[in-house]
Length: 82
Length: 473
Image 1 (cartoon, chains in turn yellow, green):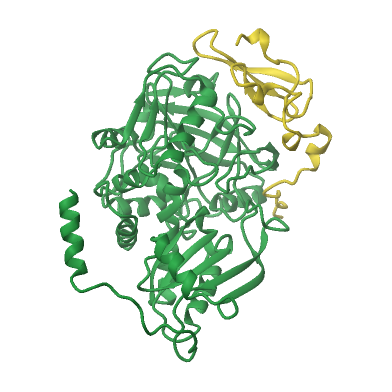
Image 2 (tube, helix red, strand yellow):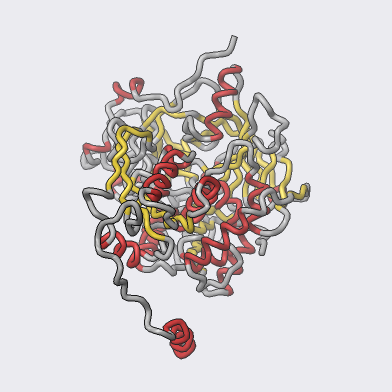
């Protein structure tokens, strides 16, 4: 698969059009890693469609970007000591 | 028996026919995860896998070792035992060495991971062949490194310095996500740092000899040093080296040492990650690490752990280091306990053999197990068996359960106890009923059933076991 065939602009998990190149392979031309700035999902240009295709990414693993701030913080941030 | 480092252990595995070096080209995904999964699927005597030709990396430079302790023979070799040593014998050997705590440490400054230092333009993907392990993991993880931290309220206490294994999401070239739960020692260190308004310095040591990895996954008391336990388990002083930026004590023999800090007050989406429960973890907002320096050997080996639906490398790695602490802590209260097998999903299900003193005794021992430190998050199902039943022999355990256990008299259900939130049956997450299934033989004053005519071994059976073993060799 060539980089030109793979999704490089829409996050497969949260569908945000907020994707940037994370890094490229040490041997040039091997692969490119992409990361979603919104939900921190990352994928490699050489991965199967199960990891790269927003249309077929399973509903149970999808995330709505609007819901991210409400996801529980674990562990919770404790109050500062006085 | 002490291995100097990961390479020394891999060489030992190779000599014993327990290392498979794969030199053909592989894709980072899905090949490496699939190979580890496949090895666990087909045998419990499988080899470690070493990949040396990974797409995107120069052959021989980007290397991945996985499934390193992914079988009983490899676990026996970890302990320096014959690779055919039974699980039960490995358990008692491990338990015996536990008593040698605290073992000595030795400080050395000429660590091989000081060969190369990176302080600028750090990109972990250039250094390590990171890869997605399971299909719906959110990205690449580091899941077998030991993370070292100190208690900011008591930074000079060597015992409180923690060496633990935590899942680490590689979020960017030099930025990580980490999962220190509140109950973990690292969680306590982070809590103290955040209460003080400070970042928490951490060192992440990748690619180690197998004993510190085993101890790093062990439920030790808060003020007990993992290095001193590693020395006890390996029967030799444990070598450590001062990390250059943080001053933390890290293993001498590591492949890579990453230093940085957990940023106080920051939480960012992390996960899902396929976990040892056989289910993905979901996503949470979790702490973030900023990397400041990386020290490494030339051409480091990236060691990774396969985990997912049991059994996997994770189950072999954690089997006895979970069972032995429960055994030792339980035996303190009840010397009648003869063995503990807590190797099913890290002890969510456990089997305890005990010599009953009187009717109802085994049920009390089961209740005690649930209230031990590890029991607070595990021990959801406990099967109690007599002292002459080997808890590591499931055929014997199922026999005891089938003929000794009476559903009316031998079921103890304790409602609404704590359990790890990753247990997918817990509802709400972290709360569950727990149950004791008492499969011991009823004794006075609990006189019921018909157990007086047990079919024992014919005379000379023990002699014949040796004869047959000899003939089979």
